[in-house]
Length: 245
Length: 318
Image 1 (tube, rainbow over the protein chains, first blue to last red):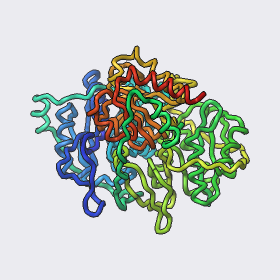
Image 2 (cartoon, each protein chain N blue to C red):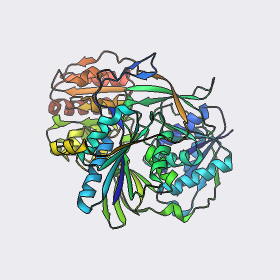
Image 3 (tube, chains in turn orange, yellow):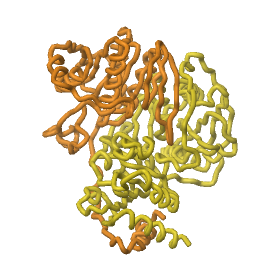
Image 4 (tube, rainbow over the protein chains, first blue to last red):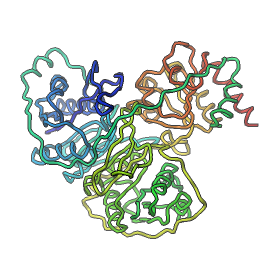
């Protein structure tokens, strides 16, 4: 089975978010970048599927040269080769078109990625890629098993799960607990250095939405502390001040 | 030009988040047409008029009883074409999000999700959206003629004016190609208040020490009329189901009130709750980082404070 895993290169989940250049650029100073946590789940499951039944895992990232350490990490985790489409991933539609243009002749049986990137949280690239390739796209996928040409999936819905069946090929936006994250071992890290990382230039695509300015949320006021022996005061505050009861 | 709103329903009523989407579209000033799919009483759909829709198109093809994403996208494409709507508005949901992504790709429409405010159309079409899991916002301009706005919960207040919408049957042509996926079953809590829709949320963390102690969380939630949530370790350890996990990689909530019990407040958890209107933190550790993000805090043992709080709430209700 030939699997494509699309990954994002995003600030670590504990990173402090701030902006520069008059709030038009993310301040990457001192920020560590990682494989998107949801993409990391997709990658882990893809590697498990390959280990179980053979085939290959190709990693794809739409990004500038800065993302290469992140791509190498994906190779160290167990992907066989990688493709970087050399462009700033500014817009979901743009990214989806780049992925679809690469994948349409790639002969992939399965295209996996995270349910959303943790920077822009759009959660739409998998659906767009599915539409552009005329394939089903399922998200957020929590379980994925493949027998022959048929896949059995569970996806999260409000208040529970939905179980689905479909044939390959399709697109899956993944989340926990589809697999456990894999930590690269020394052998993986060494072999990743010599694995193929191909850089290709982007194709013409639509930029549907452009960024004007970033903005931080208003600062939170002081916390009001209430004595543990006086919970009635909290009830009064919730009723009369917060007006939520 | 009309604005189309995708209206979702559950257990025979239109979801509140969909009514908010109707109110949002109505506030943009154009005619609002709702689109609902699947069995629901006409009377229940008329309620969308109360939030600002002039009419609701109702698709009742029985092939659409289950939420097959590709088929729903096909329905929306046909409804946009038939009504001439260039803007689609919908609430964030497990069905709406993937459907809208397909519609966007099909129609070349600019799709912005997690929209938190009305658009500014004074110069172009600009919307504010939440990013970095609520830690910041981005103001973006949509440049395409067709536009899709996916709303974050509480993006606007639900406004009602007592009017009713007319409900029209809407026939669609569905291709076999849209039914490549079979939904074999659903495993869904019924009768519970669903976390993503909830106005009030009570969440428990590792400080609750074990699943056997969740009774007091549920009792407090029941007294408040709240949904229950939990932190990531709690769902990872299997104390509570994954759909209750609130945080960066779980459900993001934006209720009127979020009560966090025995949750220290890791940055990944805060990311899932930071757009709550009011946050109450109960924790025995006065140094818990969650207090810095709270509006109200109690330092104390949850096993003592929570039952007392439930009693005090009951007393206040009587």
